[in-house]
Image 1: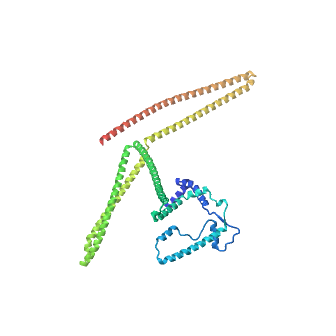
Image 2: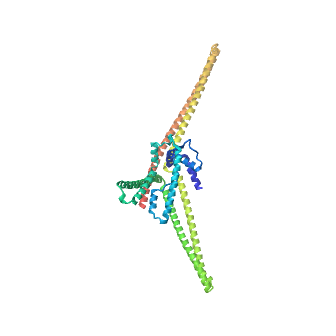
Image 3: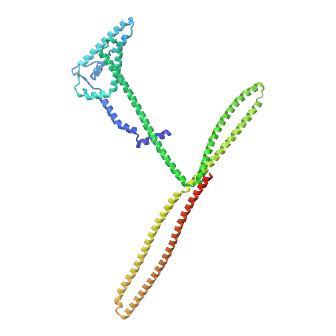
Length: 498
């Protein structure tokens, strides 16, 4: 399951991200493919010769195969023995009886080789060289081939130099001329150059490995430094939180943590002691069993009373079992006590986390004050809107009454002026209207005075509350100062007591 999860994680990672090695591989992939294609194009078989049209047709399959290979510049036949092999054959001493057979075989081989050469020449006379551009080899392509096969060329040159030096060593020093001595020196110097070049490549590879290790160690050091700085910041924040917490609760928590660590160390020591004791007791039991078996056999053979001899051993085993059960029960009680202490520590941790610190309380108070101010501002604005609406509505009602009154006067004025009785009645109605308006005005004035008195009372209450608030802030400030003095005095008393 773990391998499956790991492979799934790697596949999901590779869908979105890529490693630097993968990026480098992708960058070099196109160039490598192009190089391989160029190499395959350079080294592909090229036709050098072509059979003439008037040439006779080859009948046997072997001749057709040789002809096809010759068209592409391949000559397969009997290989001649190299000079080095001949020299080695000369050095090996042959018996007199085998020398004649060896000469006969060599003569037969020369004849077969001459026949093969004659056959190849006959096939070549019936071919013409290809004149197209594909069969030509330019100077640039030759340079590319030499550049790509430089390592193989160096290896072949070194092997040839070694063989040449061996052959020259076999010859007598008197026959060596200045040119041969110079050639030997050049070969020796070339060998030294190759050795030094190989040593330089090894040193460069070693330097690359050391540089990679240095970069890796530098990266590890940077990570460790960042992790150390992170730990320092966390420790500083914990110390800051600890300085703001209640000292009595912290002291109690430290005591409980120390007790927990002490109990854990006691438990580890007790477990180690129990394991040692169990090993010792098991060893004693095995020894006693072996002794009992030997003693029982001896007693049975000598006196025939093994039961009395086993009684002390059985009592000792029972004593050991009883001690083991007692120690096991003691371990169980210690574990129960440790679990109870751990629960108490967890409860205290939760209680400490539930109690907000002074900074949190101040922040909560600021947020509540801001919320209250916002609510108060919205409430005040809403009350102003309601008051404005009621005022405008009353004004509208009075204006409508005034307009209706003026319209009624305008409509009835001409009829009222027609006769003296109607005019008197009209005047009386006008006096009644004026009297009603005066009464309404008096009521509004009375209501205005009442609202003004209520406003003054509320203003007085507001001033009293402001005075109480100022006194409250002053008292709280004095209380904080006294609390700080009390903490300083308590710390001094604890310092003197300790």
